[in-house]
Amino acid sequence: MSLASPPATPGLTGATARGILMMLLAVLGMTAMDAAAKELIGRYPTLQVVWARYIFQTLGVALWQARHLRRILRTAHPWLHVLRSLCQLGATMCFFASLRFVGLATATAIADMSPILITLGAALILRERIGPRRIAGVTVAFIGALIIIRPGSSVFSLAALLPLAAATCFAGYALITRYIGAREPVWTALIYATMIGSATTTALLPGVWQPIAWGDLPIFVLIGSLGVVAQVFMIRAYSLAEASVIAPFGQADLIFAAMLGLVFFGEFPDGWTIVGALVIAGAGLYVWHRETRAARAGQDG
Image 1 (cartoon, rainbow, N blue to C red):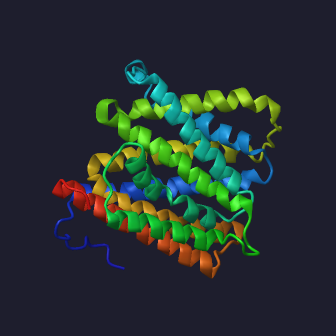
Image 2: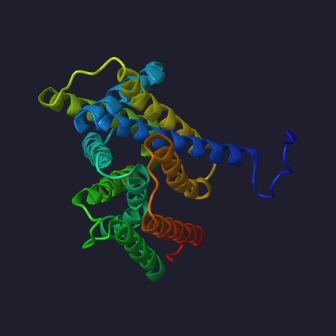
């Protein structure tokens, strides 16, 4: 294997290439965090695993930004941050809970409905215009979800709706983030999300707490650590490259989830799940393409 640098791709700058790499590392980190959560979900209450995700991430972010905490804690939208954080907490709770019942790749594929739901929510709530082609993309994505969930069939279970609920909560989180916009630093949103998530889960934890085995403690720490690292990679990715360039690489979570599910849990998605995942991914990429074109042209697609 040659170690020589490949010829430069026209239009792909070094910063953009690094941004794409950072995005892929962020997605891998998030998927690895989900895999670690799935490992613990079978032995501990869902709330306790979610608590670990938030408490260790809060500590990580606080240490990372210790010198700037006073500045990043200033906000003009405290209640929006509360609502936004609760949406993210709901997404995490629903997704982690689903891992007790469905495979990692299946849950990830259904949760990848979130970009489609964001587009739909932007039209219904933020009153953004949405053209017939993007409506078609949203419809196709829902068909993909139905292919995976297969209501009415022998493989259907209510637990398959949990990743869809997670996607809905995440869409709410993203819409509030879009509403707040660039008026506040990214770290402000991140520190409030982790703090409110930590406070909420800690308050509820005594009712479900189960002693942690020493052998499982590193996995609990790993969940929070991966969350911090993935967030840092994602922030770095968006600082290096345009969102319209790197966003499609978020679909790599389907590949990573299938690989980690197979290696660590012996799971492999069935044919219909693969078909449904491809339909959702294709619809998501199409909607992203139409939104990018509309933004550049200054008109709706």
